[in-house]
Length: 131
Image 1 (cartoon, one colour):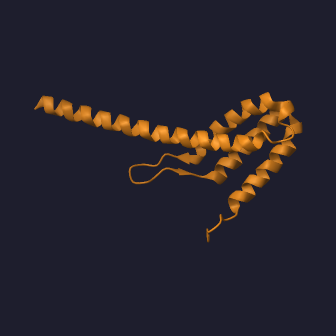
Image 2 (cartoon, rainbow, N blue to C red):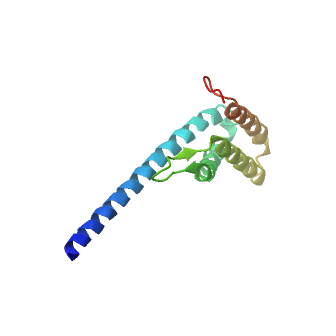
């Protein structure tokens, strides 16, 4: 009887670990795709070249900060979700705060312009979307 109970517990542990691995793998893939997408726009900023190290460092931090708050891994009965508007707002706010804190005020207008472009795109319905 006790052996069957241990086997049952062992199977449950393996299933839970497998489920957690799957969720974190999906979250990691989503995170990587989003970060790559936004960095494509960042590197096109006119101020990127002379501030590349700053952008590379703080965009990484901004992404982690914003993604943790905007991504919901879901549950057994609810699929994962991502609030892109919240992510973008937090991402750009973090960059602007860091630019002010590190005396990189010359990058702020470019960041604000990119923020406005992204947020207006999020607010507009996509093609075929009637909402």
